[in-house]
Image 1 (cartoon, helix red, strand yellow):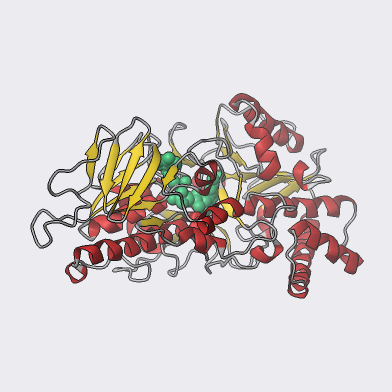
Image 2 (cartoon, rainbow, N blue to C red):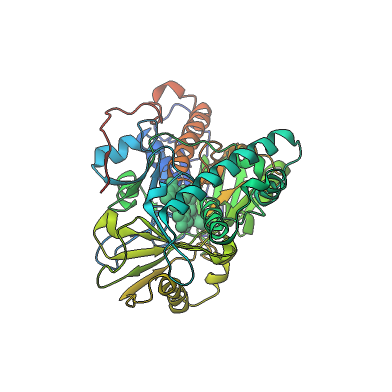
Length: 493
Ligand SMILES: Cc1cc2nc3c(=O)[nH]c(=O)nc-3n(C[C@H](O)[C@H](O)[C@H](O)COP(=O)(O)OP(=O)(O)OC[C@H]3O[C@@H](n4cnc5c(N)ncnc54)[C@H](O)[C@@H]3O)c2cc1C
């Protein structure tokens, strides 16, 4: 079992989880500590628990879910972190669970949308003077943007050296002046670029052209979790030994076990640990590893990018905006552009979600909540001058929150995509999980979920090998072996 001690002195009592003594006796009990209670950590803990391994999950916050954070303070669920299921299809590892829970999804796009999660016809864009951009222009520029992206593909194939998305765009414009746009069309193009930056949570001058091509996208389009993502976390967490408010500060690994120390000095010991904390937290070095992590792992932590995307949620008395899924403000630069997700279409509540990313998100995090909400409202006033003030607001701060220190990972210029795999590879009896360890689906809930299952399986094998009991236990749940397949409930108005 996982043993807990109030002091830093090592425990030496019988049946200690990392003891190899007593092989074949009843006191043996394989044990694992899972660090981090986001979707990856909770999935890992669930799988290990279900495979009859003693698990304790240590979570620094006073809630589970991490970057899945459904807030109920408006009297209905609103996601401040993840809200879309990217890939509404049976291949999505989360589909069986979401289907079984009967959680409804609202479709925001089909398969062929520009920039993944929204169809062109679902936007209403405005200039800074509140004039709506004609829909034909939105569509035309959307198509031009797709052509530019195709041209950047060619640039990528021709060049061995990596470059930023921004640099690739300028090469495309040099070669194909016909793709250059002027006036309002240029501003609309900047808006598409702004959406792209939102997808990566980073500015185009830092996003890798080569890395961009590596990301996989599941089929089936994109569905918003109408009742929020939290039920998924709660279902996975049922019956687990979870310790909230346990901020891990030190992880010591021995040849036969791990010792994990939390902020107040208490220690936990087990055969192995699953480290499922965000890349931003690993980068901050607020957790001491002893012995230190190998250089290749430390370099991967340093070189992989972590971006910022935030949500400023405005709750209004009533709806006064058009019936589209996205409202946008176009501007001369992508920094000046902005957009609002209209939650009313999906949930029936009069809520708009302002979503800044990259440098803009970082700048807004320097403001107070009130100033941030006001900033978002002022953007809205530009396009809808008669907008009434919100009655409530919520502001996320994923970049400065010490439990996340970023929103999600992305490939930076000149760094290989295999960094995700290096982040995942175990070090002795430490197993790593989380969105930044997902080679195929980084930055997503389903990607993080899969890495939790993968780490659990690797960890289970390792622990049971030590106990010589590999054949006694059932495999942990696999991503592809869904016992029952329930169709997902997705709709669109
Ligand atoms: C604004 C935003 C929008 C997003 N939108 C989507 C979306 O629509 N669809 C999608 O698929 N993905 C989306 N994502 C990404 C998705 O939320 C993440 O990829 C995923 O939730 C990450 O899960 P995780 O388990 O890897 O990390 P986390 O959820 O961050 O979990 C890590 C946990 O570790 C804890 N922790 C940190 N430090 C310590 C410590 N020292 N000791 C103990 N515990 C610690 C944290 O509190 C946290 O609970 C979005 C993210 C953000 C921020």
